[in-house]
Length: 365
Image (cartoon, rainbow, N blue to C red; front, side, top):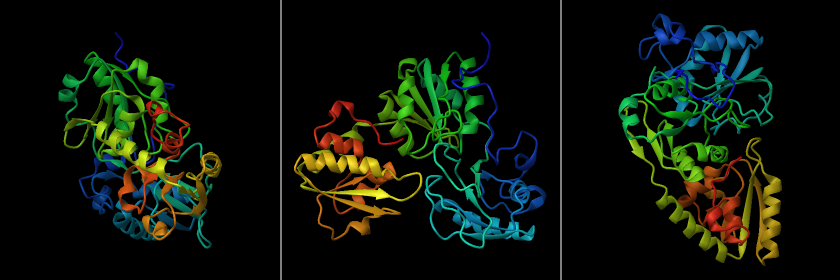
């Protein structure tokens, strides 16, 4: 049998910025340093200040705003200092960004934005004055893969977040050599890399259920593998590529909690339906549709518009339930912090009797 992983996309290399070929650039660096002993802004991740400076120079930009997610803000300050040493006026945004869904044109006085930590979302319109630099993990292979394969069934749906998606091709090949059938999801409307998943994009995984016995998620954290488990209904395993520890994802507790929140929401008479103005999160038509359905069933509704939805913005408002049409993680991750139940549009349909509980799905695009 030919030793190639089964790919559900054209056989073409896809390498995000920050992912040099073996033997070049940051792959040769020592931990905590860039080439030549330069301090590394993001220990544990691969990033090339030279590559970033080149990308900025190719655009003729002189002054940029660096936009990091919360976890990379400290390193972003060092990156700005390194870029200034190269003659680029680089400042760091104080605003927290939640992903490529959360982009704006550069403010006055800046030529462009350097967006760290995420790939662009192909299906979202964004300012052309933006460089996406994903920042990938500083590892060459997945720890614990051999042991993990002994526990896995024959057919595997392989997924990862952007920090580890570059490892999937070689891991799939290794798994195939051990007799596994491996499917990598094709790049989608919001995911430009094979096998990549986002916290707002799981529904595309359903098309692979009939060809898979289980899902293997490569990465850290529990939200992404949980979303994959609920969306596919398949046994799902989370493999930490740094420690080599693999755990089976337990989705039942999550579903019980969501069922309880939906039941509470169904009893609510006043619904607050929230819309985010973030370019990649705004679903005003979805909000209007849910509001109309709720009113048909004798609920009072209020449409609320805002940039970032946070618990404090709902304190004191007269309502029984919040329907968030913004990032799914607001409802699924943060509901305990809100003064009333927070549900997704799909959960609102269940609460209103439009959708059956058996047809539950994780919100997303």
